[in-house]
Length: 382
Image 1 (spheres, rainbow, N blue to C red):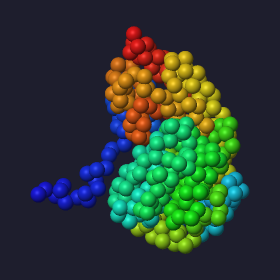
Image 2: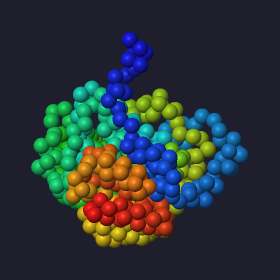
Image 3: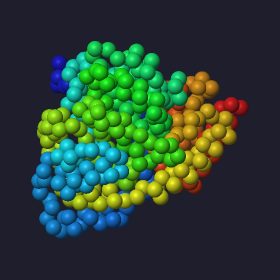
Image 4: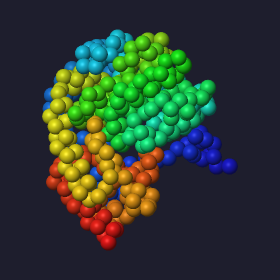
């Protein structure tokens, strides 16, 4: 027996991110238009960046409070209260290494082996992988028949005595769908009288277009069951900073913070003031730029004959490729090799008849990629 065989057995069922794999292939392909990663193409705003040098000059390079400096937790609590109506004390904020750590802390903290987590699909691949590493069981819930929304019948059918949590991601990655009031009410009815956590992954909340947005976290009477995940990455173009936060009721938080403490100790000391300043930035100009890009992409894709639902938030479109009769990995591989355009296979999100296009790039690059995609589809159909 090799030492590899002595590793944690869950590592052998974990999958590498198809998003990263296709991005890697794209980087190795000359003159490739990469429409894969969900990363803002804007640099972090100057006022946020400007806060780091003074922090370093002031010697803020030492250990800080595990859950984050008080100035940042105070600001996050005030921000959530003023902007979103969520009433959490600064003590109930855990500043995390991005939303990724917040999700891991939340799921690791609530799951025992064999516990089930309902994940509406299409869904970000990270959820299933974390559940697997925590020795839980993913229960997929296909939302495509309901227009990427949730309805009571299908949801109730997946609840069992082992159901421990439901993960809600709205706006959704990869569809851009925002859960409507009927969806939120369906979840409310499902968990109100059951001991089921609801993990609200709201990282795209600030990037909504014309839809009135409501988070499930607004159901204050379910507070003890709520775990709210947020990130600086998407709204403030801070992906490389690895900064986010987790909100939870005090009774739950005082246990979850132990996971965070033993996993990362804390987030970087020099970034605390910058995080507080970030929350004062208005993402509206970025949203307007994404709105223009969304209109361009939708117009072009529909002109190509692709069926696509208009995203209400985030910066992705998720067109169907069902009519081409191939799986999404085959489609994306051919597109990459023959047209030098990189998209992400829908299989990565549990929807093998779709592909994800990220419009986190300038219009000129988008047009270039869309021109190549159009020629590729004409050759396929010809």
